[in-house]
Image (cartoon, rainbow over all chains, first blue to last red):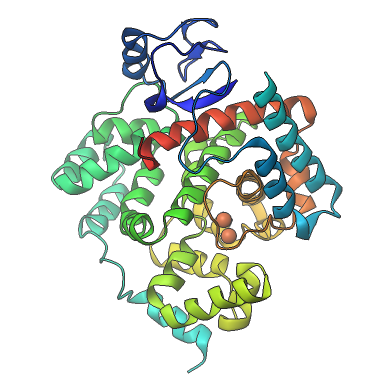
Length: 102
Length: 278
Ligand SMILES: [Fe+2]
Ligand SMILES: [Fe+2]
């Protein structure tokens, strides 16, 4: 699954999670296939981002999973001896791995 | 003249940033008055159309997370509080400079504001929007160094690139003071409330923030998580050291961490509607 800004939404994409407004109202359920009408309804209701199935969008500057993890580890080089920092790194890495595989 | 004095003097009379809108002193007078209402404050602000449209754009950008668009200034004051609105007005020139000269730092700031908003809500901090706002401007010290002291800034950047040090280590060597402190001076100069200025000053040393330790801790952790995520650019590529005192304030375990990651992913994607062309 992939979280994308609403402006990158295209017809035919399928929601991996329900689209929810900030105050918790579910506008479209999981599994909804996006149409122009659905996209514009979400936009009008102030939904800024949605979670879609697969990984359909390459956002500008976006790297592949492997490279993202490698960069992540490199950014932690100076603090890798701190167990809490290491746990934070793992948390992010696991979240990314999971979202690419789901 | 010694550098620290030079910097302090310059902050009183910033040359590189547009002067504060005259409206600020008028607003400051008005809030002293106990009978003033959000509507009357809003009316004064709305006389300045450029400011109003900028302000509404800011309050509607996703890090505050209001479901409905906020369409009037008085509405924004009611929802976000006057501290937030005033801070956004006072710092609006900084945002302009950041957006045009340092988009990486701008994204870093937006990302931190988003994460701070998530944590402030989860930890039931009152006025969570003030925490987001403080987080949004936590690195203003860096903007000022860059725009007011370009020679020093060039030296700092060179140090960061050549020696791989943290930006604030380079600041300390070149200026004798770090951007947190400079940001704090500036916030004081602008009479921002202590709830914002103290966490800004101590965002790298949150345990020193006294009664505002929780807010400072949230900003501290935000800076770490957003850099870790690789969102925007905070001046050097490293994840900074963690203050364990800050972590004790707001720590989360694996299960909550997982939820936080999901929320953050959504928020950061929302922000891309504002910062990215498709
Ligand atoms: Fe900082
Ligand atoms: Fe920062």
